[in-house]
Length: 333
Image (cartoon, rainbow, N blue to C red; front, side):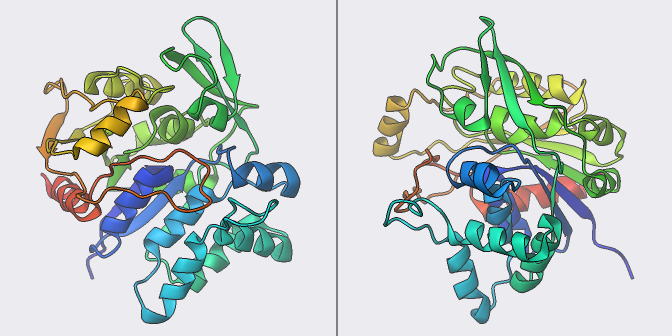
């Protein structure tokens, strides 16, 4: 019997959620390898008070890959439910609290993750990129340094400063199961997602870059829709690619996937301007990789959930459009 091709999605955050949501019903074996450096919102509490690795990005992956069965619907709703009343619990998600409780019961966060995947009947595997408890450190063009994913993501400094170097404090090592999946993948998908707080955090973990380069898998980078103040202010598409290649250790990418539909509501465009964000200008050329351009935009404007204290994107890629293009790339000779 012919095996399904394996797609490894390397990232974190909403972008990875969207990719997994579109791919979960395709005839592929899915593995999500997720950044473990989140330090904002409820993740700060999980790290500081519970001594756990952050779980918000893993929770999103669990929801994305959960089977669409009638008896699973309430579980998916519970895992995304965010408390918005009270003082101490406001902003926390039920999913994060549930996984914290399971980790305490099993005395092992990996066992807890495996049990949640069983309960949700996830169509795929979810793995942390590292088991080490580390923080992100960003160095800027003017020598300024910021520690902590949340402080980088929502800067108190001038968000137009360019980040020139990223690392973890202390050094982190790749989780052995994550390394095995990368090495045996047929396609590795990077992005979409915040460049310096969702994608590159995986690549600065010792052993990840080497595994990606060594893997015989095709490598695909999905470009973001918008720039982000504090991370990619003023970036063109080529600058996203150049920055990612820097942390990949050279020209490793085979395909670039770019949205070419920019029918954006005026109200959304206005709000992005207020946030000092702009459409990522497509200046890409066929330079050792194939550029695939397609309509990838979701027609649905994202509404903020009550109790959510983190800034979220207003526009997102459409899961089904994205999955269709990814499968085409997977099947390219």
